Image (cartoon, rainbow over all chains, first blue to last red; front, side, top):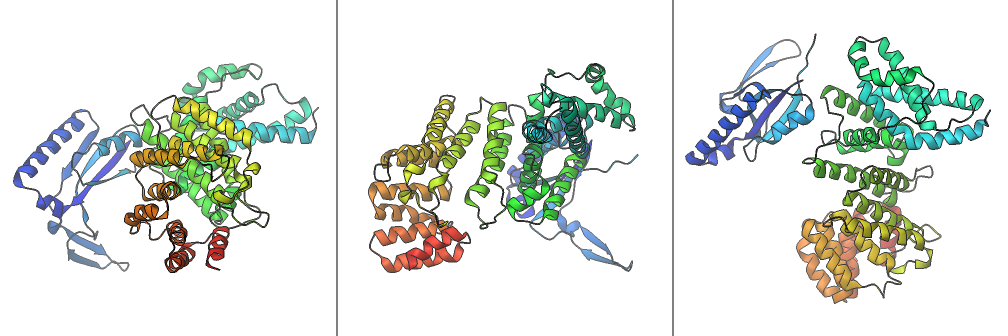
Length: 116
Length: 409
């Protein structure tokens, strides 16, 4: 069963961390990601550039498109990355999410629709 | 031949006891919640017919299980995933070729699995409550709706959504392992306690057809206690509920108005039930360091054993609250501790203890009602009146409203 794990956090909190703290945290994430990937629980995923690099495209009901600067979700918690999990059930997926090493982050776990 | 009415009532009793076990076993085999419920319903209909003509079997639960399983096999034959599922059923299917087995072992584990799935933290509290009452408690959707005074369609929708999430997000059907158990059990106990309080306090007023949810919650908790006899918090919650129920008769006067603990006629309490609950509590206390339910039950037990309000050992109660505050430092627990403190050390000591809670409990009617009473005793009638007015503003329960109105009169 595959799930997407969206990883969100407060970018201000990230920005407030000292360079040393950031480096240490990135090292922990790298290690964590390495372990979860080696075990096969994470099969794909990426870190995303910060939200100012985001561009939102809206398709109107009439089919017209509008392009705006920034992410489409307003709020403090912004998606900063995602992982694709391949585990047996939701409890396993939640266990992976709960072990994410960044204090203050928020994770959303959702099943991927698999047709066929 | 058996009397139809005898069959009816026996079937009702058996279903109450066995329903969750049947559904649990079928969900495990079929991985389909709706189908499991449907098959149990079918088996119940079949039972009514067969038991009336052939008599009530020696082990009615096993009869229902075998019948439901046979129907499950029939259904599976017609399905695409037949062989896959059939492999799981082989052993059980063999036993089904013979006469109905009335001694067969029925897994208690299935009920626990079902309960932990109903109370999975990935489901919201309302969904957990509805699923637990419907699936384990065996209440009809309409009964759940009446109990919570919401439209039946709302409950039906909650149940559909919850079952859909269990299926689509693949919430596993299992008893959590030792590492997760404390948190997951806590979730289960919170659901049961919420159901109990909903029945016991009846926040939304007097509905004549209202089901006694407090009794349902007590029954469910006693079931969990039978399935997990070594969990002190389960026993603690059960003792807590039983101590409340044992004193339920004293809580209301003849005209339906609420009677405070201080003024209750303690001869109306069910003394043997209190002693049973205290014994249960003692058994639980021997098992490990007490958790919040055990400590709350211990406090209620001290009250329940006291011959009168005046003869209550307030020092012991304050000490018990101190222990509870240490592991559960919520403002409501601190409020209750302050009220015990008022009896031991007087109203001023209690008002001092309440002071730091004012911000967090401003929206809680009992905080203001407690302050009102303490201010009156401390000789500040104006302050008392203001506090009681605020309490009245925040109260919807009619019995509680009457009590505050009397104070204001």
